[in-house]
Length: 132
Image 1 (spheres, helix red, strand yellow):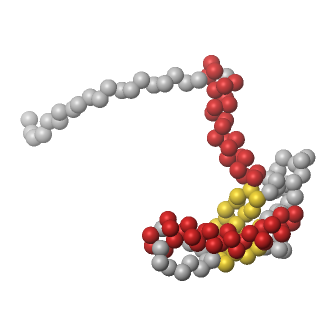
Image 2 (cartoon, helix red, strand yellow):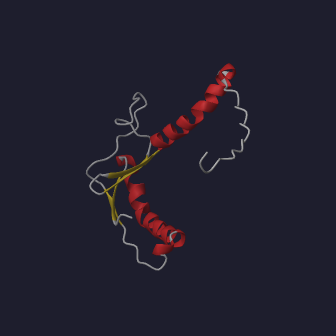
Image 3 (cartoon, one colour):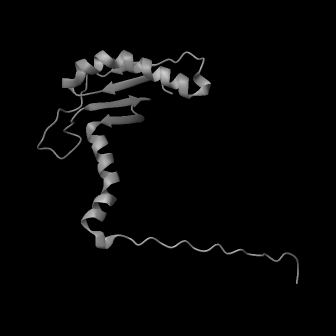
């Protein structure tokens, strides 16, 4: 658990993110104490720092790159950027898209649906121990 986390957002989301940081930190601490036995009775140190020097890019409907367009959300950094957690809408959509591909493929191309493999019968082996 990191005691200091830097948060990046779009400039247009700055005010709302800044307004909810304290509530988010309090909710995180509450969840950690209730879900992780080792932290139940401990004081959890967490400093959320909103990066006001570098913002995520604003949404650009003509861009197909997540590096120069962002629909919203935040990216959290810890350990000088070695730990990164992206919780942007763009990332969430990519996850949903990736999970949906097999189902979409099956709906569009039912002829490519793999037949389920029958279960192999369990064969009991009676090993022979000892010398011949």
